[in-house]
Length: 228
Image 1: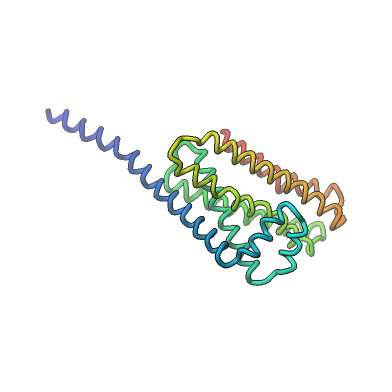
Image 2: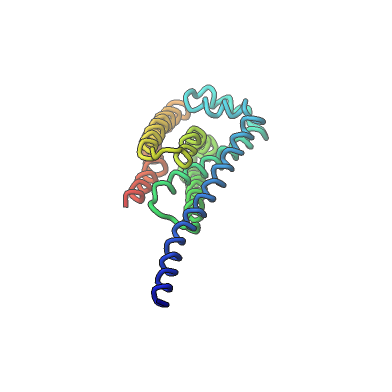
């Protein structure tokens, strides 16, 4: 009888551990999305004029140039807030792609996404120094991150539905997110190629090298990691 009670207690404990982990993970998701919602509310309330320019810059270079010309404390804040949104929302989507993940792994994944973009900035500055394009590095960083930051904002509604919708529609949402991300990526590659060759007169080789090394290759590595 005593052995049966011990076995029953062990079974209850083993049953409760996954539930506890799920609750912890759900709390983390709630915190992350609450932060995203707060950041979007700040953009809407205080920096909507500059945020609209940033988002419209994805579809028209005229708006992107206007955003750059108005460079001030407000645009710097918009850049920072949208960078945070990009990091949080991209991390939330990657977390959803993983079958099971601990609190530590969630923290490491968010840190990895943040480090990825920070290292991208570092490598872009290194590329600029190597190929004597230091004066263009700032513009290159802006136009490269313009599309990623805008995508981070556009994906927020999808991320909210992904975690808190009443019905299980994860596969459909992931397909929609993939489509939106692909469209933004194609726009990004097109504008970077056009701006680099026509506006700055860079050679096709330099543009191709940059796109392969810092835009396409990291995405291929990410896709391979998710598939594995």
